[in-house]
Length: 149
Image (tube, rainbow, N blue to C red):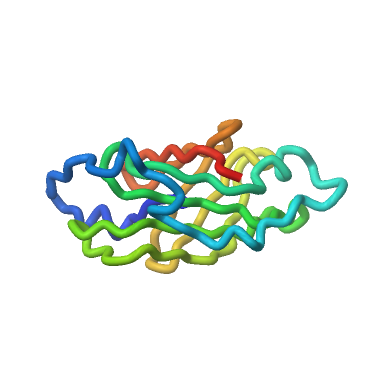
């Protein structure tokens, strides 16, 4: 959703930000449209199907920017997923309101171990499936979002 923004790394440039929302970060802080989540079609390999769902939480490990990452659907033949990448508001980084971005992500590596999300502002996030969560890398930042749906 996640999740997190590469452009924000530049905007943050040396800001010291207290983790004001980190302990209380919820989906409501970085809302995304969950109405398009489709169960994986019958016969979809399990390593792809397990991704379908919504993940949310403190995207930046204490920065107070909340994120949501939604995998609406997967296409194992094309090795792609339709995803929503969303973040909450965070005034220190000039993010006055929550936003969401609908993008097509690509599975990379063996099977569906990792998901590459190319974002509209020419940045890339990588996610690894972690059971009831996804772990991500965005620039030098680590992202951890728990499954909410």
